[in-house]
Length: 287
Ligand SMILES: *[C@@H]1O[C@H](CO)[C@@H](O)[C@H](O)[C@H]1NC(C)=O
Ligand SMILES: *[C@@H]1O[C@H](CO)[C@@H](O)[C@H](O)[C@H]1NC(C)=O
Ligand SMILES: *[C@@H]1O[C@H](CO)[C@@H](O)[C@H](O)[C@H]1NC(C)=O
Image (cartoon, helix red, strand yellow):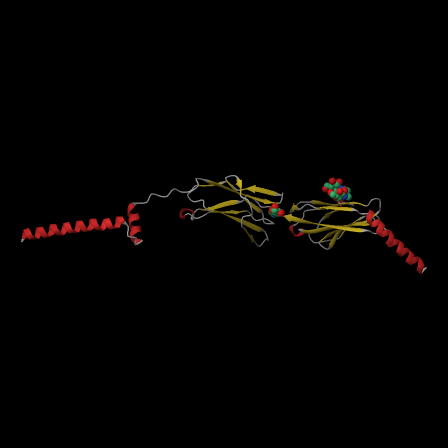
């Protein structure tokens, strides 16, 4: 009796190794990278048992099982309650599981575990990440700061996308040309845990050499959302013609002894001298 058991075990391991090369060669889990919050989603776990009978398909969110399909059981489907998870049994079967009105808290790792039946019980598991996204309500907005431009400083522009989850990717376009590389983006998280992305663009060396710059910003959340800001045209203001008096005052206050300054002093001196001479002459006549 004992010997038979050992023999059986030996055969089991022997064949299991041979069989494992054959069965469950491929298990493919397809889960969308991102889905909109509130929508339904069908996750698919495809497998090829190469003729071996199926024992079970188990689905996990993180480490918690939420759905199981066992063809030998009646009914073959079983749903395990999980907070925020609504399995549509009518849309679920041996390969697919359909989730209704997914919430943002269901962002995470989904796993599918396929097991072949006795005597081998060969098991394969696959996992994939899914993000439940909240897309921005509206388009991004561009704000331009021209204050530094007049002193030859950079043109600074900011692009802000409406709150979303996760924070949208921002792309800048200058005169219809995509700005390469990643520009600096800061993310603010509000109390609803939505993320507001603000991208900053600095165009250095823009002062003087350019005529007009057209700026646009595009925000995207995976393939679920893509929107462009209104195009903003920035024109450098031509230097304002300033009154001469102000110019003079400025040069005096600067303490800069310019040639015009010296000439002014000279004129003043001549005028004073002439006045004194005239006054002296008059005094002499009177006396
Ligand atoms: C899984 O994907 C691979 C590669 O795309 C493919 O060759 C294989 O046939 C797929 N298996 C199943 C069971 O769909
Ligand atoms: C699973 O769902 C996909 C579409 O999401 C569909 O093409 C496929 O036929 C379904 N498979 C089964 C076994 O229902
Ligand atoms: C942002 O872009 C990166 C790189 O293309 C991509 O991997 C990521 O998924 C994108 N994120 C969003 C929220 O669209």
